[in-house]
Amino acid sequence: MKHPKRFRIEDLQVPPGKHAHLARRDPDDTFGFRDADEAKPVLEKDLKRLAELQERLYAEDRQSLLVVLQGMDTSGKDGTVKHVFSGVNPGGCAVTRFKTPSLEEAEHDFLWRIHHAAPRRGEIMIFNRSHYEDVLIVRVHGLVPAEVWKRRYEQINRFERILTENGTRILKFFLHIDKHEQKRRLQDRLEDKSKRWKFSRTDLKERELWGEYRKAYEDALTKCSTPWAPWHVVPANRKWYRNLVVARTLVETLEEMDPRLPKPVPGLSGIRVR
Image (cartoon, rainbow, N blue to C red; front, side, top):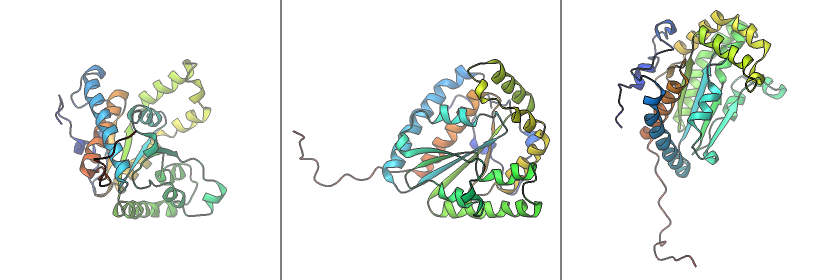
């Protein structure tokens, strides 16, 4: 599939074993696309192809795809789900959000509820936030001792390898915005009455911890970008480009997975519906 500009998914990946270096990744980058109008036909083509591939994945009922969305507050996780997955069959696609663990969840290891939500065969499951919160928010807010959350990087890597060895591909996206863009989006929520419900005073408290979150994210991306589940750092200051990157990566991944429609039951050619 040809595109009007150079567009390599590998350029967005954190190479396994290498430092993520978020400061070297420009959240304003669009890799040659000038604006949303130029990107629109490419995105539309990818969304159509995504719907076709997802239907094949669902019908095949053999493989599955896990999509992990992480990012600072206002980075666009909900918007990504809304715009990229709008055309897929909801029977084969679901979204899970992970908030404060319930009493039952808190009685198990931190991955128990995550494994329970992993995609079924034939399904695309989207994690809007994920198991990575257990090396992010718990670290920044000191909810568990350092010796506990530091062990979790390797536990996450082993868990993700188990999923991939059992037929689940994993795509992990860090939606990369800068602090100025977050300020603009938070202010927009305050000024736009239709968006004000999204705003919380806790957003301002979390914003004060930007540096701590940035460090926590950088460590997570560095330590948990593996050959079987690499992290993709998506320049997300421009929402249209964020959508383009995620859609293109999904299409390329599903094409590699190459799901096949099941063969029809023999003897159908002579049947006539009356």
